[in-house]
Length: 165
Image 1 (cartoon, rainbow, N blue to C red):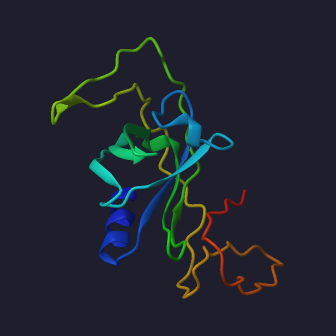
Image 2: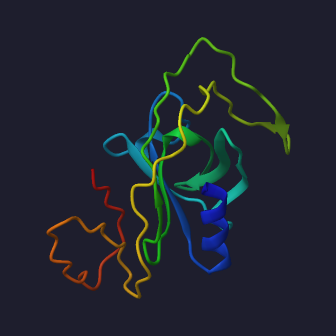
């Protein structure tokens, strides 16, 4: 699903963003993590060597002008969405216990080693949390709940991803 939504975003001219739950199994710049979560721009222009496997998403990206290696287990992905309109898919993170004593897998690419980690097998398929309907607004769509009066979203401001539990 991640690859399909990523391709839909890029084919439609949108910027794909990945919302990630950070734990010991993720390799991200910790100074940008807020409340145990980070949102990453995974567009072609923002990443280098993007690889989306069944187990993880890995790439290089610049943070504050410094190139960093990013490693995200698929189980830690909370959502993938288009930044321009908020359309995409949210998942319930299946946080696995990380084994720091396990040896990482190193595979050289372009003269540098990629980051590896031990990830437990996927216990269940990702659960669909919400899929917004088509909107022309620049803010992400909110999931409607029973009894919700479905007010139109307010105009302006930067789009944000809101998880509804």
